[in-house]
Image 1 (cartoon, helix red, strand yellow):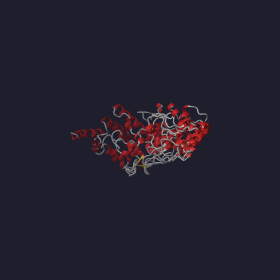
Image 2: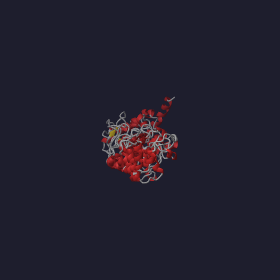
Image 3: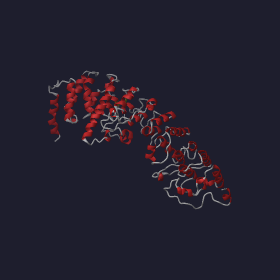
Image 4: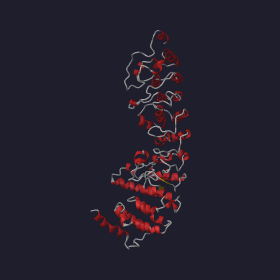
Length: 496
């Protein structure tokens, strides 16, 4: 090499192969790469070539890949002379200012099998010394303007999430403990754990959505804020609740399908009553009232100290409600039209609309599932409530009066089942008569189409009479069923 250089050999050839846009840096055709630096296997050779042509470090011939990238990529397909030799070569090139070719625009590689630059190539090679060297480099490390460090970090958190954002890649076949060491290397080099990465998602958010329990544990150990929230990110514990959603109609724990659990690391690190989205937001227990969440998850939160008496707003424009109201009305309500409910993927997944409710059989099964889950959560809630204070809304209204004024159809069945027992412990004895009388008032039946169906209405009459409600109205002398039937012709006349 020294003799050739002394006789006028060029470190970067004046002519060479034209590399198509789809060529990867490890392709055979890149053995014709114009820069001799791309083919070195020893630090001595690299030093000799760099001394002869210092500008060759970053490929002035514009062949799409810098020598650093080609050396790393070829080390994936061909065994290098040794990790220590590869480390020495990379260390020398980095010290001379080697960088990634794709500093600002890498979108044209999204449909290929590899989108990474030097940092991700080093991860794919799985040489820890080289990874640490590049992460700490100011050219291709965490300050790299191409955003490669962000992509590499997300791939360490969750390959699945990274594939959705950046495209599918090959490589990254290392053991979990190696993955966690790499995460620690990034963080110690200054990678921010409490700043948004992509689509305003934070590292801990990505780990909860798509990562493993150990990844969550490592991030918390490394300093991730386990209680952060903002207008687009849920409280981490609430997000973990949403991830445990049950997608099967009529699914129960006995079926063996209930695999998702609340992260124990979040239960230990988070404020059990941490708010989401804003200062008066829902607590994790309120999110657990969703019909898509198993009662076991609801009980887990209470067993870990969740306050059942707290109130909150889902969004700043939402009304303030308590946990009991969340269960009774179903969360989130099918007719709520908050824009945030549709833009938040995590909240949208709690909506029952993802089940095929267009079929009558599915609607029936979902209603049965909802009743069962709500009853189980109410049973657990009633064991921890403060009576009678928790039986009133944040505005001081009797919760049964609120339910009668605001709920309808299948949501009312659970209300009817608990109506008589609750009336017995209300502050004002007159609440019982006024609530139960309002339950079957003509105005309610008119405004809410009875209780959804005549069959459901009859079920509610049976429930009330079985609980001791007089079958004959004490005011007008009519039977309950007579009152229901008597208004049917009037409703029919008014609908013409």
